[in-house]
Image: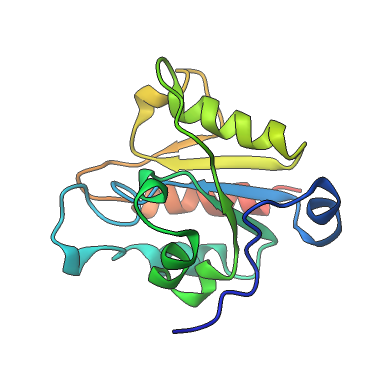
Length: 160
């Protein structure tokens, strides 16, 4: 196992300002990094493609997946390619219930740490976001992230 050296389960505002890039990616797993309901040996089949797309861009990742309720952050980082794992800075908090729950969880995370960076969410659950949410990159849950969504990630990362 490789050591986890970068993520901060509880980043303070001063930590955020001093060591973290200006862009955040909120990452769902099921329906993004692999198809929904796929066998375990297919988990994270798209993780390397996402890592390659992010490349050398200055972006951090916050896990917004429900996997955060069943696995430690350390375990989740270990499941990802190192190029993604080293970007993980934390996970969103307690679940929100009701309308646009994933979006509210993300806004809660941003507010709790007074984060003002640009952000996107990679998620297959469009109903968990307002219909006009420009930050959502919606993935097809039956296949996971594809070329079209990866191109949108690349465009986000390329914007000044």
